[in-house]
Image 1: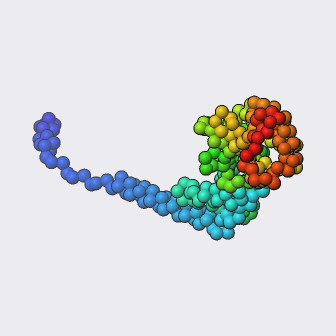
Image 2: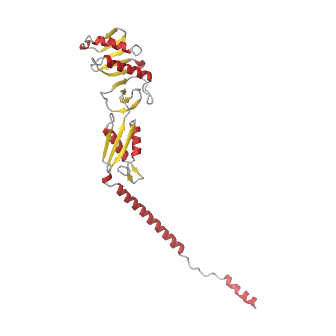
Image 3: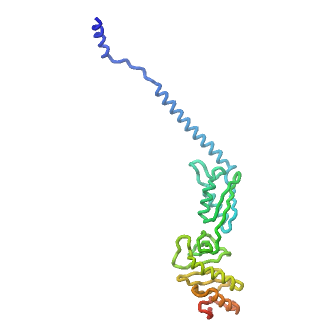
Length: 274
């Protein structure tokens, strides 16, 4: 009897199952999570805008750039370089031209590299100023090559490019076909010749006539230009002091009152002029 009842209920297994109620917890959870994500993004954006508005308050904008310690470096040139660097943005939102975000360490390094300085230090001054303190490499000559001007140190090493001539430096006009590469413009032997000419001229000739420029040609033929207008031909392979002593003797005869183009002192005590 029990077996028949069990057998009679077997038909229920073949009937379609009743539809089960849809579980909505998953969809509700997903929707809430999405909404929270959107809210977080909005809050982050609002936070960034708030921080940006604080950083970009005009009160903190860098308005003054003061330079100290410079000699040949132009104040306007250095200021313009710093201003152009501060115009950049950080993280796409924040301008660096403000007290809080100005990258003074990076700016100091870039300034030192661009102008080949001995030292460069930038300090922030509350609330809208920068103090730039520099120490330049000591320059002794101006190297003139083609239409460009450069400062050189006493060893013939390149300091940096300049825009205008400066009377306090002797000009080395380089008309050689050869163009030096790197920072070593003149070899130690070449700079020794230049220094010998410069020092002996100052001792022997400068009280009478000032030298304004040394012109160097191929094979190191040298002309010494004077502020008076004439130039002097000198031989680098002969005794520099002896040649300039001969020049002094000629100048003491007051021949400079005559209209002359050049004086040639390359042939011992025989001095020629035209």
